[in-house]
Length: 176
Image 1 (cartoon, rainbow, N blue to C red):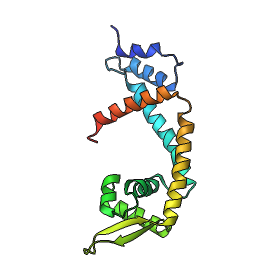
Image 2 (image 1 turned 90 degrees about the vertical axis):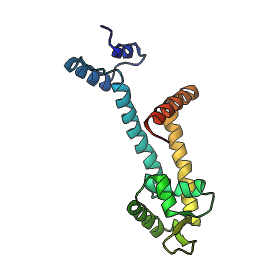
Image 3 (image 1 turned 120 degrees about the horizontal axis):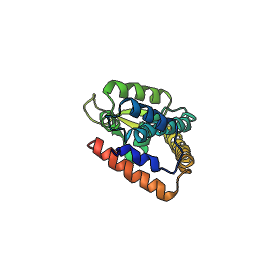
Image 4 (image 1 turned 90 degrees about the horizontal axis):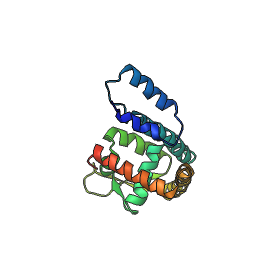
């Protein structure tokens, strides 16, 4: 019987601990298809390692990754206009309570301002301060530098292939 996992034996890289773990499981449960397990485990591992480096780049500016995402959305996504807190929360997939906590911290740091732009006093918008603009623009440059260091291990062709494969996988898992 040819197992789908045998395809992994043709790789150009030496076996690693993930390959070994899958092989151990394959011995325990040969009735299951383990063909994609090492690849997905590697994807999870790489995501965690990338997140650590990217988070460190923005942490140098006093930001969490989530705060950076919110500031980035305000800077690039809003094109300088205020955005409603509920609109930001929807785009960031955050609850109202999580948004309140994040906005409170950014406002206390002087990076954003809450602003009433509608007659409805419950409808608040968020605007970057000059300090917020400076912080996010510096942080994005450092984040991109970290991304470039990470991707230096790949050729431009490999990076493009990886992007295409991950885009396809992401599309199959979500409606976005």
